Amino acid sequence: MVIRQSLEGRSILLIISGGIAAYKSLDLIRRLRERGARVRCVMSEAAQNFVTPMAVGALTGETVFTQLWDRDAEQDIGHIRLAREADLVIVAPATADLMAKMANGLANDLASTVLLAVSSPVLVAPAMNPAMWDHPATQRNADQLMADGILFTGPADGEMAESGEAGTGRMSEVMDIVTEAERVLDDRPKPLAGKRAVITSGPTREAIDPVRYISNHSSGKQGHAIAAALADAGADVILVSGPVTIDPPADVTVVDVVSAQDMADAVDRALPADIAVFVAAVADWRVSSQAPEKMKKDGSGQFPALDMVENPDILRGVAQRKENRPALVIGFAAETEKLEEHAKVKLAKKGADWIVANDVSEGVFGTDRNSVTLVTKGGAEKWPASSKDQVAMRLVERIAERFETVAV
Ligand code: CTP
Image (cartoon, rainbow, N blue to C red; front, side):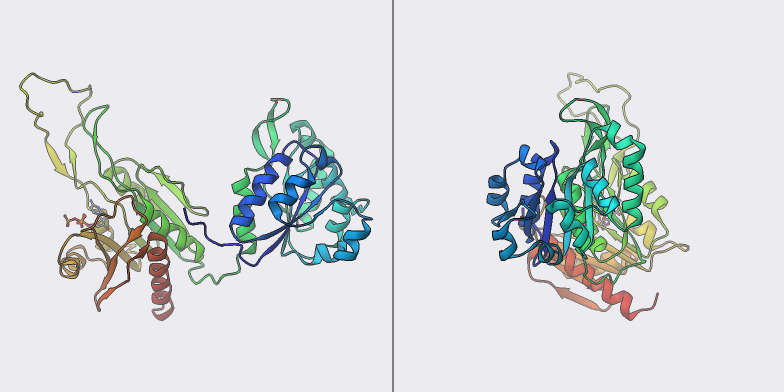
């Protein structure tokens, strides 16, 4: 898997305070670094009961700061500079004690002193026993911190690592903290801010009986990549997804569906939208009525005759709407030959604005690469073969250009 260098050139100061969730901070360091961030750590005295500065130093590749009055560290960098040089400060785990100090402006150890000197955004991931989180004092401190502009992720619900007790107090999952950090540090232009997009992705499943279905090999990778790229460009994205095994992209609303009819209904409910992209490999037919019980072999040696009817063409239905037609309707076409010619026919037949024609002669399902030609009413443009993520980014660039030049 290629990990986007979303935090490239960014400096993150991770403050680890003393809670059992500190073990997760080791994974957090790895995830932040593999996205390109420089990570420096401050560990409180109590944190060192759970993880060692040695482990933290090995994972960050940096000096670990543990003492307020450490002459070597002060000569080297100094706590004020440590605070100022970070683009983002993450406190994970944040204990009730550290939150109380932050809310009251106390500065009696390195972690709290650094937190009083920062000018960059601060993201806090609380982790504590549910009774401590629910306590009015902690709630008061959390409210104060939010009022001071401190960002929060979690705490989540679930079982506590040490006591098995259930309630609110678990530290956010590591990837949720990473996603929040990416969001805070994302200063890329948002050309599609304020635009709403609906995407279909993945296969559909058409039931034959309670255990069998007709489907196809679509992985959803291309559709999900387009949904992610649209969200990165600032669009408000609804991803209507057939059954897939890949993870949903961050920052999109996912509507899970099974059959073509479910997908058509979900798209209908998601409209109106400015942009609609139909990437799903929708089954063209379904069995007219699903058998209520599992079908049995009848001894004839023949596959039982199935009465098949055509599914609604979702792309055509939306492209030809009289009311609430999205300003830009994009379809996909899988072709093995005469790519451009077939795509032009499809463009006209369906009433789409653009067709992204996929060359599937060498197999595309489940792979990470795609070779496509963008066919519009104005002509065809062959793009070099590239990853599905790159195809998605290029398509979204084109969508953004189109909304720049045509005031819609
Ligand atoms: N599509 C749809 N609803 C359907 C069938 C297709 O929305 N019931 C959309 C797909 O998401 C895709 C495009 O229509 O954007 C593909 O058109 P389709 O007619 O299925 O073309 P191909 O799959 O390329 O197949 P064929 O060559 O048989 O036309």
